[in-house]
Amino acid sequence: MKIGIDLDGVVLDTEKQFRNAAELYDMNILKKNSLINNQEIIIENRYNWSNETLKNFYKENLVKCTEKSSAMPGAKEVIELLKKDGHELILITARGGEYPEMIDAGKRILEKEKISFDKYYWKADDKTEICKKENIDLMIEDKLENCEGVANANIKAIYLRDSNMKPSNNPNIKEVYLWAEIYRYIKELEN
Image 1 (cartoon, rainbow, N blue to C red):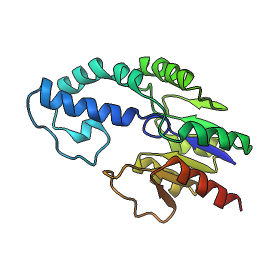
Image 2: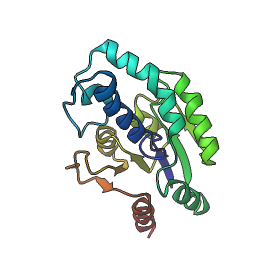
Image 3: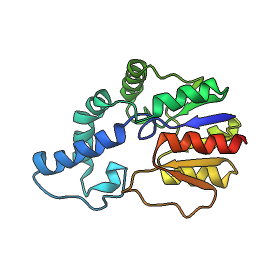
């Protein structure tokens, strides 16, 4: 099976690092409560910040949060099991689109965690198109909109979500909370 895998919030805990840093930035640096949606993982949609505030936050925190990141619980183990089972694993991430220095930061943390893929797509704005081009059988993602896009293209999607993220109503999307659940679902698909 060809499996597409997102990076941030799926393989690495960078999404939690970003959200934690943003909460502290809002309270301790900005000295206010600008939170508008705690279920939103995209910082731009999570706070009522000006473009200048967003730019300053990213400049101060993007690389720093990546360097603090580590593999999500179970990610490395399950990725190794999937490789052993003969699956082709393709990293498909939007990382690096607006901030190119984030690609090198991502590569460094993957190397540190000893996690590798068969193929890499950085700056992937349209993950659905890449999934179609690569004939992906299954995409693992933490952004609901991306899951819906691939599911609408008749590609199976796994939505790895936190409890604070909105649920999916799409019957073509499998919702999970853990990497072990991802592995169980893939094994069920194989049988």
